[in-house]
Amino acid sequence: MTIQIVKDYYGKILSTSSDLKTEACCTPGDVPAHVRLALSNIHDEVLAKYYGCGLVTPEALKGARILDLGSGSGRDVYALAQMVGPSGSVVGVDMTDEQIAVAQRHVEWHRQKFGYAKSNVQFHQGYIEDLAALGLERGSFDIVVSNCVINLSPDKAAVLKGAYDLLKPGGELYFSDVYADRRLSGAIRNDPVLYGECLGGALYWGDFDRLAKAAGFADPRLVNDRPLGITDPSLAAKIGTAKFYSATYRLFKLDGLEPRCEDYGQAVIYKGGIPHADDVFHLDGHHAIEKGKVFPVCGNTWRMLADTRFKPYFNFVGDFKTHYGIFPGCGTTIPYAQTAFANVAGACC
Image 1 (cartoon, one colour):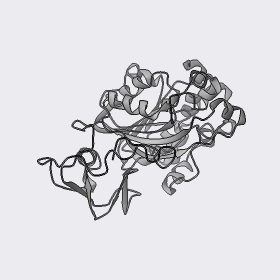
Image 2 (spheres, helix red, strand yellow; image 1 turned 60 degrees about the vertical axis):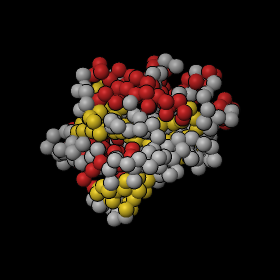
Image 3 (tube, one colour; image 1 turned 90 degrees about the horizontal axis):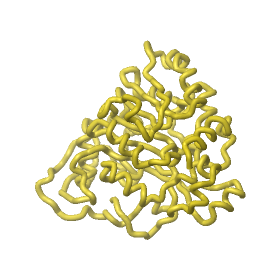
Image 4 (tube, one colour; image 1 turned 45 degrees about the vertical axis):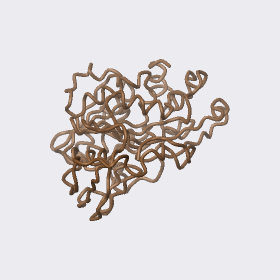
């Protein structure tokens, strides 16, 4: 599928999000209150041109430097700009002329709306497969986000590797996208409408796991997922029995992560203090860490908290001196186990 088809679909064929034929590129209505507040401060034209499939607003963002891959009209950039505050910054990258024009048109409007002395956002026109061409400093971003865009890329491995290179040690790629329960046929992959609707380019989750690890992200963590309904009868007929899911992952750039979740007898205690996570911090779909409670963790989870921006919010118990084998529960579930893949063996605790 050519890049030009994607540019035309999002730049010329779609006028607003209401033109979409499926719900793949639409964020569900259950949005946290602080995110709704941020969205209420965004220009109507920017909101109308939004085509995301999830929420890319991770925790503890104040002062962070963030890169948005496939930033489109700038909705997520402007939402994140409020969360990082005037001491942080957000950079958006998109290849579509029309989308970049919308985003850039409202930079000053949002600066005034947020009450900042100077804008903390930038937009670059370019390709997420070739981030090096943009002149961005390697190892300079705390977080890279993307919202339902990587599936549209013809070279997903290059996107993941480019994001890894731009992240600081301990940084993370936090992104929502569309996945399939199988490798898709050529007829589905090459259908222009299915591709533009974020379905034709959806990766089989197992292939995504392999590509992420090859790029350097040793232990991908699933944050949440939901099944996608295909409401257009003609598109449903083309798809057949394939199932699709919107899923959010967080991938940390950390040395020392192991291929499996190993048990070193460690635990963490959440001290609180992360905004909008007063009583419980959700690292991912399997780790809801209550404030004040001793919470046993594997070595990889320990590093995801101790060697990242989350360290100030936790106390840490134990070390890596003694190994006790595989962490209990590791290897018993796979992504989307509550939907299509219940009781199927896989990886990640």
